[in-house]
Amino acid sequence: MNIRKILVWDIPTRIFHWTLVLLVVAAYCTALIGGNLIVWHGWLGIAIGGLLVFRLMWGVIGSTYARFANFVPGPGGIVAYLRGQWRGVGHNPLGALSVLVLLAILGFQVVSGLVANDDIAFEGPLYALVSKDTSDWLSGLHRQNFWITIALVALHVLAVLFYAHVKKDNLVKPMITGFKEVSDPELKSAQGGGTVAFILALAVAGFAVWAAMGGLLPPPPPPPPAQAVPAW
Figure 1 (tube, helix red, strand yellow):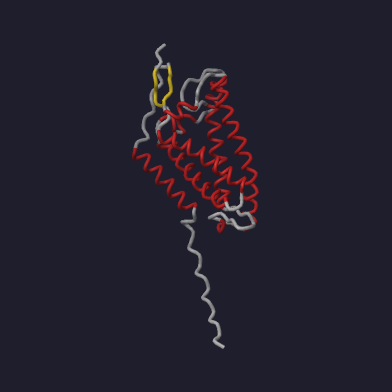
Figure 2: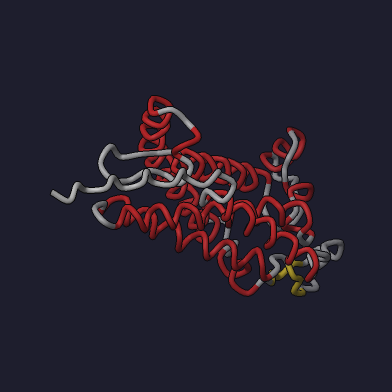
């Protein structure tokens, strides 16, 4: 059996993955501690939003195995995987579904946080776009979705451990090195996702961060002029 290494995960995908891990952990900790750290929680949420936008772009113009067109499964792909007939590298059909769900859940968490408030001192940077009632409603969903996010992340970690110890398939190492050992001669290294694609995805993500910080909102009205104090 001819074992060889192929490139599966490009550098931008790996940086995205591990940076997202760090930011989600930091957002989780700042949310639990609260207090003055809620401001940092907001900044972390905006950074996570920028990462998600980058990943969405990279899923279209990135390298082979990072593209949604390559790993998003149809019903046939899921059935083939459950029957043990799936052949490939990167995200398997069930793993792909978990990735899509995590992206959607984190995306909702970011969007709801941008208009959230805590009725004390914090308002999301886009709070002005919605009514107080809508903000309160989304703030409640934001708090509830927090625990859903943690549950999905825990499930993701358990799945990785299952593959490592039961299926003897180390999913972490390729996400660190980028390479995976394969025996199938039809499997090729990832192609595409060059410098131009990276700069474009980064630019779109940067614009999204600027917009999330309120860059598209009209400037606030100037404060009323101070009334003159009588001289007597």
